[in-house]
Image (cartoon, rainbow, N blue to C red):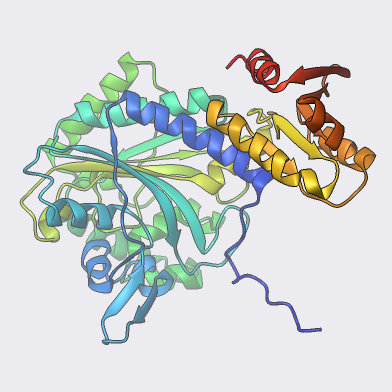
Length: 425
């Protein structure tokens, strides 16, 4: 026997039982996005490596350690997308969508990062991304937060997630702050863990996110970014906070909250939960008002967010709050005798033509009638239709109501009408 080949580490299969919750979550997400007039866009999984290097930053963990990059047959460096914002901006510029006055978009699909796999963190993971372009006031920041809040309420997870928000000012503000932060951390270099020492001169902002308890105590005395932020960003953030207060949105102003990608500025936020372990960020985003220009477009304000679908589904399953019970099969067709198979298939197609939303299953297994009926019951089918030689000769069918344990004989025309009554079609 040949040795079996397992899936790639950090990538896994999504099986039917799990996908029932996924589909329900996705449907709710799409309904809410539609109600806010966001339009779907579908983006390539592969992009040119240099676009992520330019946009995300060469000294970020994503670019330095986590991207799946390779060269194609012509020697071009390509990368499996580690996030969706950069590709969406590229698509906006390339397809002249800014000139078509298109502003609000969403996309859903797999992303790839070479990280250490653990619960809630995978090397292939699915994200919902939402992006808005061309609006620079706090009104759109508020709309984004209201949209996400509505989603949590519709999914039933609202009590289990909390919003952390901050303003990180402009790039120039962060350069000034970074110098002071590095100067402070150098004085406490002996207390830095190995990971923080590596980041000290390349990406010191990530040290603020450290889970090291000793380091967290030291950071309480560190200079605060808020003291280096320009007045325009402060004013924008204060207006947003006042609007959130008026809409009774609960939030925590986390002064140490930064995002791991270089393109963010001004408003940044994360929704976290304490229900699923250490990978506790369900949703994150913020403003990126310079990214369009960085990638070759005109200066355009922008804001967006991403939701990790695996983590969201993990939260929902841990809380057991989203019921996905439904009939696996509406109509289970059983034929008796191989010669009657063609008739059973024809009947199933006729029913589908009339009732395209019904789930109809034809049992092709070569087993006894009693076994087929047991299979129909085990599949949670609502009704079973039995087709045998005698039924065909008499032009009638035996219909079994598997929910109520009743049986009926119908002609084909009567059967079609009865199906309508069964399923309110």
